[in-house]
Image 1 (cartoon, protein in one colour):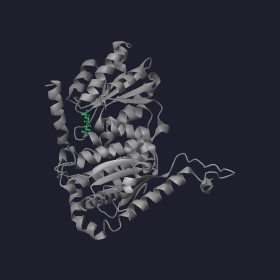
Image 2: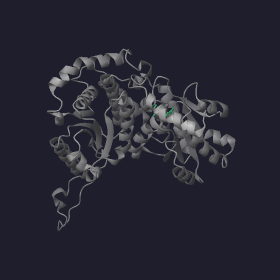
Image 3: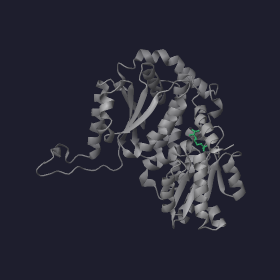
Image 4: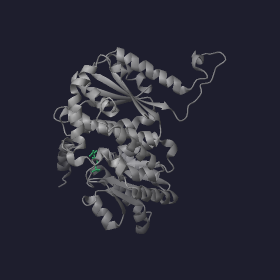
Length: 424
Ligand code: PA5
């Protein structure tokens, strides 16, 4: 198995008897998902998406990628939430695959940040991918206005048209109308795949392939996930074991889940994961609060709280079994800093000892923890990991009794903001 789940450090917190007790509910959640009879049944397009991504679409996107890389010196990706995080998490995880620099906008409303991007774009020949399922989201809509106006001063209408690609709904939304009117190349987001589940639709595939990421491998990994995590047997299904464990921990008062990785290039994977679980679980007064840290960096800032603060936390570690570039630690003749004990060893060996130490110490400090280990840091494994979490969140939401596939709560602030803005 190329993704492993270690639950040893749940001993005493999640017992075999606990798991046995909720087994019928896991089976029901599985059936409700697979037979599409549970809550949010119209939004289950992600479930068999990996096996259904059309070969022709992948070829079309890869061909476009070659053209874009020939004619552009950077890619600007505009989008927010589900139309942003999966792209960034994949790109930052796989820096060695990136052939075309990518910059992001439309995920905030900081004018200083956008001004910085415009400065970066001076004299550049960018391709802009605008991503919005609804086609009406404030942040990407405003960033698109600004960037389009900025580029229109330098490029002819015909060239500008070639430099803009839209990823949006097949029929509705302002972005769709824009694209039709201006003749922009467009890719469709399937109706039955929600924003946070959309990384394997053109939302993720288009920008990622355009910058050089191996989307075939990404899809292959997700297919592996679809196969492995489609098994109704809890004993064999690691995504279900993860979902069941976090649910049982929550029932026992562990209200915060901290996703802890040991690699800075997994920062945005955690951001993607936070949206996935926060937006799916957080309803009807329920939901585990998803937080994240990068160790060992954050052991020097958050370590105290994890070890010794309020005991409402459990941790999920994310590990890479074989790193891509290990570095051998040099030896000092005088051992002035006392680290000759690890001279000649890889830095990753030390990183893994930090993990072993943190996992054991936190467990002893009443922070139960699990570990998800990816065999390698590559496109295949992040594809499989995405599917692992997607499947787990479906089961998790059904265990909590909520609809894991909607997000009605996010409208509340928008209504107030639109009123303040005078937007109809
Ligand atoms: O999960 C979601 O639905 C949200 O995060 C959306 O993806 C986000 O608000 C962006 O929406 P849209 O793609 O419609 O612009």
